[in-house]
Each structure stands twice: as C-alpha cells, then as structure tokens.
Length: 351
Image 1 (cartoon, rainbow, N blue to C red):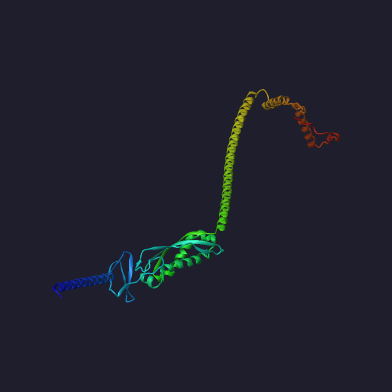
Image 2 (tube, rainbow, N blue to C red):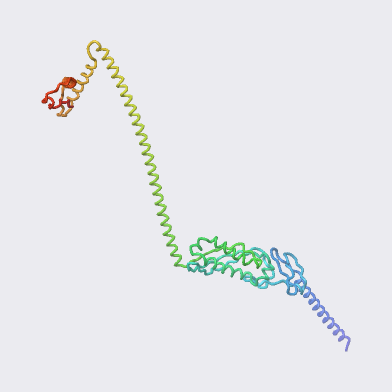
C-alpha cells in the first residue's frame, strides 16, 4: 500500500468521524429541544393547565411560565364538544353556547321549535375536567331537557309571553346541575319560539279580533265619557240658568216692590192732599170712591164684552139699606111676611 493510499484512507476516516460527530450533536440538540418543550410551558392569560405526574393529578399551572419535570409531568388534554381535540388549556372566561332549534311540546299539545343561548363560566377547572367527561356536551343536553321540562308545564300563550320566567327557571336548573362540575351558568336566553304555521295563522286572527274588540271598547268608553261630560255641562248650564232666572226674579220682585211702595207713597200723599183740601167741603172718602167708580165705568165702556151690566153706585147703597132694615127687624123680633121671605135675593153688580 502506497503512501497516497494511506493518506486517502485517513481522509475518509476523518470525514466519517466528522459525520458521526455532527449526527451525535444533532441528536443531542434534538433531545435537548424535546426536553425543553416538555419542560417549559407558557400558559396564556385567563387560562389554566392541569399537570399530571405519572398519570395522576399534580397541580394547576397558572398563566405565565411554568416548568415541568420532563417525562414525568404531562399536561392533561381536554376533549370537549366544539373544542380542538387534545387541547391542554382551559379557558376561564365566560363562554356561550348557541343551541339550534329544538322541538318542544307544550302542555296544550302544540309542538314548537325553540332555540336558546347559554352563558357559562368554568369556576373550578379540576372538577370541570375530572367530574365530567364532556362538559360542553353535558351542558347542551341539560339545556335541552330542562327547556322541555319547563315549557312542557306551560301553555302556548304562556310560553310566548313569559320568556323571563322561562329563562329564570332554566338558569336555576342548569346552575344546580352544573355546580358539581365546577361550572357557573350565568344566563339563559330563549331567542326564538316558532309555532307551527296553522297555529301562527290562528294566533294572528285571534290577535286581530282582540285588537278590534279593544278598539270597540275604547270607542264605547270614549262615547260614555263624552256623554257624561256633556250631561255635566248641561247640568252646570241648567244650574247657572236657574241661578240667573232666580236672581232676575228676585231683582224683578224687588223692583215691583219698590214700585208699589213708591206708588203707595204717592197715593198716600195724594189722599192726604185731597183730605186736606176737602176738610170743609165734604167727606174725602166719598169723593175718592166716586172718583174710582167713574174711572171704572170709563174702563168698562171700552170693553167689547156685550154681557157687561152697568149698575149705578146708588143701587149698591139701596141694597145696603135693605140689608140694614132686615137686620133691624131681626133684632126687634118682627116676623117678615112669607112672601117677602120667599123673594129672591137682591141682584148683585155684575162686571
């Protein structure tokens, strides 16, 4: 073997050693990288990670940098519905589940489709992972069964008008059932309640009839109030009119009284003047009676009545004298003749 061949063989040995060294260093680096990946865990904010050591729960890794013992500590994977398989972090923020429409039968045997939203939050990640296999799926099933139980005890009209009551009952049912799972159900909202088409058409007709009835009732109530107000106005007007007539009659009566008083005063003054003027010429009363008699005869002559009989003032004087003589005979005891007792009574003055 020549010297050149020895140099060539030596160069090949060096190259093989270099390759082996590089392979060894790559292997060491890969192992160190794997160890670093398994040792250093960074947990995001508002999330936690459960660490198991040799298959048993060890501790809860909080947010930030966490150091694990390689090949001994291992994060526990989360296998829930609607989550990425094998996810190791648990979100502690409030989350929601949007449930698709579910068929529900009410107490009056009407099938409706109801979709709802459930808001929930993990309060104990250890219970959430170890007490329930599929936490999200369990919440969904609990919501569906609770909704059917609550709405199954209610009529269709109550399910449409009492959503707040339904939400409160569902929240209580879910909160009590999920408490041992380390979950807090904060809110349950029923989004839509869809009855069948024939029931919906019937409800629309019923609503139209109800609105028509309310309109008629309101119209009748308005007419009644208007009639009452009109009657009150007429009553007040009648009272005011009566008060006005009363005041007018009072004023008129007072005016007539004042006029009669003035007239009486004037007549009194006239009679006084006549009496004063006729003190030496005769009886003033006879003068006044004669004057009134003449005035009465003048007024009677102006009447169109043909049955009026005029009698002079002396006739009444004669009749008075006859009555006086009769009284005198009655006092003295003289019996009047029978023919005179049967005579008719004296005629009276007719006007």
